[in-house]
Length: 142
Figure 1 (cartoon, rainbow, N blue to C red):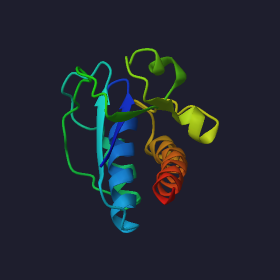
Figure 2: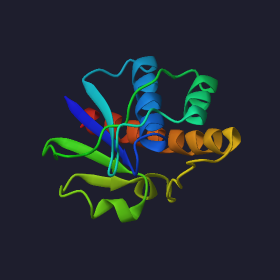
Figure 3: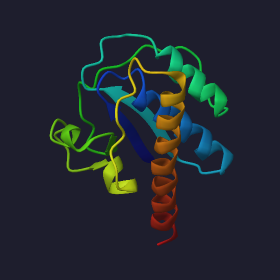
């Protein structure tokens, strides 16, 4: 079982979009034994952002409501995928990678911006997810 947790600041935009998009891709590609979640470093139980829901719906992923969940406890068996390099130091685990490691750039917070910005953000996240899935596939083939 591979456990992956996407992490952002508040858990209402980037990480929840990443979780939902990763779940969609894993299901569509028939990849088994991958558990996906998301957390926010400073999450306080807010609902998923309206424009995040719209972006997910456009990309045909689960766009249902969910409250943000704070990253309180680190699981030593979890791979944490952070949106920016500065988040890496906030997670006391050796299993932390950033979107910059995956796609060469950070995923900037779209909070409070337009639907178009959220959709562009979701598409950047998808590039990271594609790289992550490639790595999972290569790892399993070894």
